[in-house]
Image 1 (cartoon, rainbow, N blue to C red):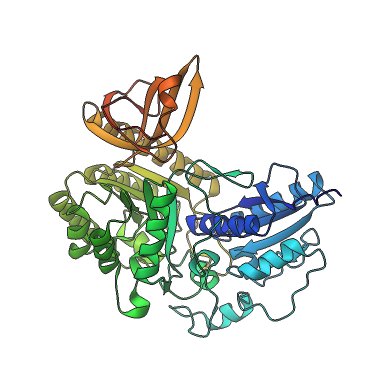
Image 2: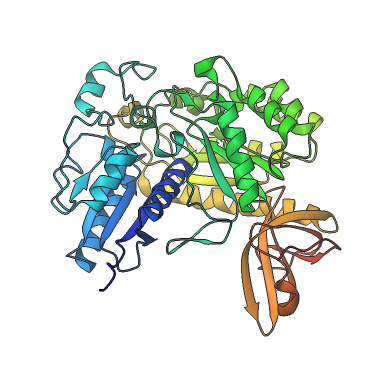
Length: 479
């Protein structure tokens, strides 16, 4: 009697860390059910597209992937989930190349759609949002009668099938740094963003559950955990707590070796939060502060909750309380109303504030957002030019930061390994969020593993290389 071949499920994930967290949960759940997750590039029976809809271009990218999969695997089924699937605007629903559409956060429905070729939606999907309704009743905060779902990775027990860093979950290799979702949803109303409508109102996980998950991740061998979410600065607002209180609880328990925060808005970084972060070696010396624009007129048009005076004051506080902290940021360039003179002024201020890197996003319209209706649109070609300029500025800033680390004793988590001629190169991310690499003999490398933290001395930063070369310091290895 021949055994039944396991269902092979390919995954393609677009967008933010929240989507990637959901994907890992789905893959783990499928492993528990006997299926075999794999990459979208592999031959599979079913493909799950976890979509992003942050811009119109994001929608186009998702649909392009759907068409590519349909051409390559015409007999396979395609299940669309994620934020794009949650917008009931016809973009996905009228696309005859998608076999099933399940709104974001509906784990069991996604699993049923994957496993059952005859799956049909049996009830109204609470994750679906009508854009017609949004256009008529758009307010500054998501409606309390809005989506009542919670993201896949926000509910349920920690997946038993989850493996350690660098190990395989089915046919998918897991990352060495784990991104743990602490909250979902956003109640800001940035004019360029539709995510508050697709991800729902702010909802946070209980502190005790997060502490349990962190201890489980330590047992699995994760040396670093990144706390992530749609709007982590709003953590706990839904039950009278705060991100500061969560980090205090984490620091008391110390369930893992090191903790990093993902992106956080300037107005969410309080003096009390900085005191907690700077007062414990548990927390990585790194903050990614989402400034988005270094110009008050643009920040106002974006409906951000701060101005540059507050950002400058915050950076000063960080330098005083936490002098070893590396600072990164995001910039949306070419936003409506931005002038060339404004770009010059923003870059000058960016350099003055001493940011170590910048993630650059040319502005891309998203239908049914307030920004899409703003006057003084910047030509798309000009947006690209400004983005290229910002990236060059960011590259120089990063090299300056990396140069300052040469000669210092650092730590990094092993994320990648590469063997050439009996020499193994380990590479990964330092506490300061800078790329490091160190080499050992192939024989010695057997005593180390992905996810392990290495203590090193930074030796040199060579021209054209994107990491600092390091030497290992004496330390205990781990087989």
